[in-house]
Length: 305
Image (cartoon, helix red, strand yellow):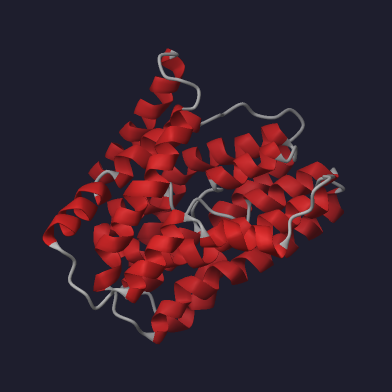
């Protein structure tokens, strides 16, 4: 609980910094860029060499795509049943399937499972959430927002191939058997330890809690789907593997993360129910401080059975 309290304090620092008016409006964007270009690659180079390859590693790669398809179909059916406006359905189709598996997930994994478990979160995030953001969200925006310039296979591919953490992951996998020079090892280790505080302060800086008028039902259903139904489905899917493995537990834990901040920003920029999208992210993170410890305790109970 001490680690969770520290994360909450980091979040509060970012939230207060925003309200002081002393920081530039783009502070969160600058912190996010630091994480993407420095801290996260540092973690990747630090943790990937210790990764032991096995067929079990496919679990955090495959599960996010199964959840994405299942949750997208579920939200689409609910949208038709409740006759939600097109922009509301589009916003939920982006915010619900895509979890905050890096900017919130990594600090939470470290708090509950230790820094060595982050490598499993990296697999879930890079091969699941990130590709989902790059490919799936682009498709949803093309379908639910009127725009002059449609995304192409080339533009999406460039977005993926030039993403610094993805480049770092590929290089780290290719050089897995090599021993890094001492100066480089010290560099990546020092960068890696900055990941959690910088991420959480950036998240706190971006938090918004204004409840959108007339959107209580989609907000409630969206958050229940993201924080409760998706981890429950993951537990059902992985029940046959048992829950003694840290990899399996982290996969379930990642599936329980709140909506991705970047996904919410994408939905807002696309004009898809901006206030609902912001509320999904803000309230999602707030409630996750309660739901994630419950998921963790449930996993410990299941592993002991």
